[in-house]
Every structure is written in C-alpha cells, then in structure tokens.
Length: 364
Image (cartoon, rainbow, N blue to C red; front, side):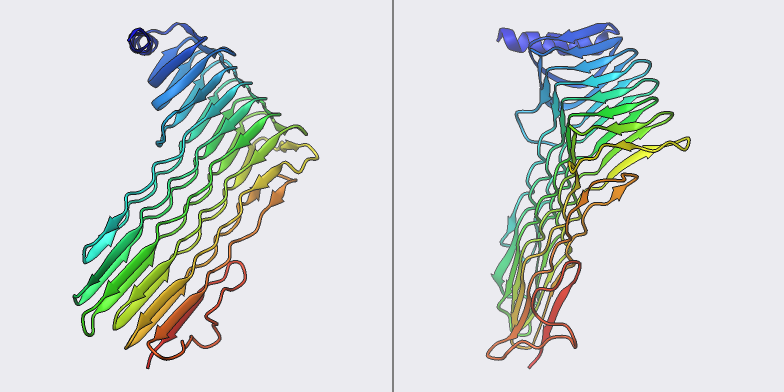
C-alpha cells in the first residue's frame, strides 16, 4: 500500500512541478512530465504504465532503466529544449497486444495486432549520446478468423493484420553519437483465415491480412554529424509473416496479402555534412518476410493467391551496413474436387523467388 501511495504521489509531483527530478529506485510512471532536468540514476527503474513524455529545459540522463511489465503500445518521448540527452542505461518499450480472434459467423474479422511502443528522443539545441540500449517493442500478432461450416450465399473470413514494430527517432541540434545498441521492433505475423461454405453454389472467401512492418530507425542532426562508432549495434526490425488462408465451397477464393517489410535505417545530416559510420557490420536492416500457403478447394471455381514477399529495409544515408533479404511468396493451390489444379499462364502454383507473387485458378 505504501509503495502504491508513493507512486501516485511521485506521479502527481512530477507532473505538477517544473523542478529537477532524479529517480533512484523503482517507480511506476506515465503521462507528461515538465521539469527543469530529468535523471534516472543507475538504481532507478521506471515501469511504464502508459505513454511517458518528459519535457526538460536542461539535460536528460538515463543511467537506470525504463521498461514495461505489461504489453501495450506505450510510447516514450524525451525532449530537452536547451540541454543534451545521455542514454547510458536502457529504454525498452513493450510489445503490442495481439488482435482478438473472430469465429463462427457468416462474416468474421480478426482484430488487428497492436503496434509496438515507439521511442522518440530529441535535444533541440544540444547533443544526444547513446552508449546504453534503446529497444522498441515488436508488434502484436493479428487475430485469426474462422467462418463456417455454414450455408449461405457468401461466407467470408478476414484475419487481422500483424502489428508494426516500434520506431526509433533521434533528433538533435548538435552531434548524435551512437556507441551502444539501438534495435527497433519487428512486425508480427497476421492471423490465419479459414472459410467454409456448405450451400450449393455458395461462395467462400478467406483473406489473410498483411504481416506487420519492421520499425524504422532514424537519426538526424540539424547542424552537426551523426557518428556511429565501431562498438555500436544498429539493427532495424524484420517484417512479419502473412499467415495461411483456406477456403472451401462450390466457389472458393483464398487470398494472402503481402508479407511485412523490414525497417529502414536512415541518418539525416544537413549543411552538406555526412554521417560518420565506423567500419562495422553492426548496422543491419530488417529482412522482409514471406507468405504462407493459400488453398482453395471447390466444385465450380477455385482461386488462390499468395502475396508478394516483403521487401528488406533500406539503408539511407548510411555508407556501410548490411541489407537483409526479401521474403518468399508461399505456395498457392487451387483445386476442383477430383481434378488437378490449373494455373494462370506462366505462373506456377508453387513458391517463387523473393519479391514474387503466386496465384492459381482452377475450373472444371
């Protein structure tokens, strides 16, 4: 009880006072804090219970930790108006919540996966130094959708899309120096989709939504350089997988949307300056992810399509680094009961190279 009262008191105090604040122990915190300066000592441990925004006239220093015990789209925004920001501890946002499944009805739709929490840090007239860890949360898994077996003119199931990974944004009036670890969250897979229609001449449609995209990482300086040392690790999140779709009926259509794209990494420097990137392989963009198999089984007409594999993240304004692979399109199989599948001209009903799309159509 004492800890709860203390946490409430501290939250109200921080929100109300424009003083210098130092957190040197466990503390639940959320909301907007307007202060002169803000410090989390090495013994400080902030548990996010919602979005946290800190606006300080002077310096912000995080030597302890900021994280969340529960999943959710919690955002951390740190802004220093006249000072600098130093991260030699850790800031980690949570994974987004999964989308809710939907089953049983004639038309069903799974819930969307939440995005992972974002982190935004700015020193409007100062520098940013990251020697610790910054990590955003992955997206949540999309909700599954299952419609039928039911008899109707149309039975439709659409799954929820995978949540996007949280983005990381650093903006400084002066130098940004990264010698620690920055990782953005990965996109998550979409829900599966299954539709079965038992009515004569009825149509069954199953659509699996897109996988989530990996979070982007952006670091920009107004007047000076962005420096990445040889001890740094900068890795953007991968795209999410697009899950399976299955449709059965006299007329059946199964479709899988595209796999998620990997997150981009971008260093922005104005006034003709260039980013200073050390000779390191620790800068990697997230890979694009692929799609599952789509299956349509019918007596009159069947179509199946597996979407394009997601593209890998881009390296922008970064001279060195590794760009991962694109995702593969999954198998597409359209079957008329008792017969072999027929495909579009020139398109095989098998998985294709990265960045491709697979389709199949079958009629008696």
